[in-house]
Image 1 (cartoon, rainbow, N blue to C red):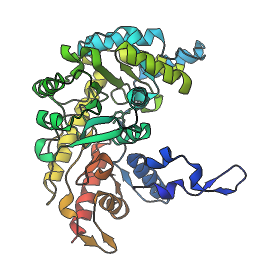
Image 2: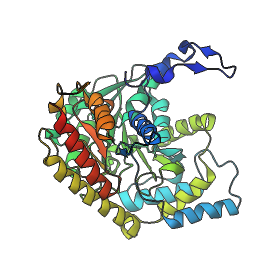
Image 3: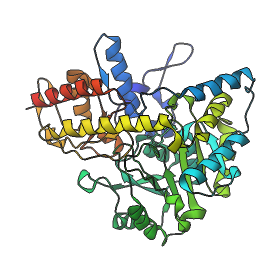
Length: 420
Ligand SMILES: Cc1ncc(COP(=O)(O)O)c(C=O)c1O
């Protein structure tokens, strides 16, 4: 699989002696390095060699954390809020999150139904480890965010992808969901706005999926809403807001994307108490509660209602302008099938018409070949769709300046034109 073997070997013990890769557990050998982080690593390497690489593979806003949030962190240090936190997060933060869920999403969760973790990634991981047994199935729409599949695989459970396409705007249809459910299905995972496609479900579409799930009351629903506010439709619909889902939905969210706080590592989940208790048990043994300073910073971010936030409006407006630019540029490139993403900060065009083409020693057989070609020849890092469960498309993050995006699109266009 992608990027696996060469990264694991050789390992060295402290003695400097090479060890056999067999020392690494089967479990870890089964999963892959994150393809997006790998592309970022490679582009940093090229940059270190003096190459002018534009990195569009990274999934983080290019904005800075808002000033009041940084101020809250400085105060936390000065006030010595630096001791072990409660495992599920500070009570004040749990309360602010419960209020946010009511304020922004009309969801009723008590503060003790909230668990704060080291990023939404850990919240998801806590949930997967808490509910999945070997052989259980998790249904999710493909293309999907890279880490879902690997974390699920780690637990011994099985990913059941529902393939969506650019022609369907990457939306899972109710009949597809029903067909994917078996007696082994333990959970269904939703992610709207979506990484990597930018797809956003509207109210009617979520309602139709809820209608299917009503027939399967034992299935847990996991809703990853990390891109909630980066939504150009003006309407975020949480599947948790449907009364039928109330007692079996885990909402996952965090501050990374909407408050440009990726490095602070604060995410959270809100869920029924049985699941919360299991996740707290796991987190208590594994990492303890997340960093106190980051929690105090997140508290300030979350207390700030997004509709009053110039910061979020400014960021979303900028992302929308960049999205429009990329849609226009991709429409000018022959053989690329594009669409209009409605949220997040990614576009996922279908580039499969370039498969089978060559330039010099490059032969493009799949999206990994194409991504490596674009990186080495075009000096633009994009993420291969293969890692997201769709080997027709590439993911481009437009969380970078318009000037750089224009330059990157020129390079992509030129590099693709050389392929014959
Ligand atoms: C869909 C999705 N969920 C979760 C995460 C993880 O976010 P965090 O930084 O809070 O761990 C990401 C980050 O890229 C994401 O794209």
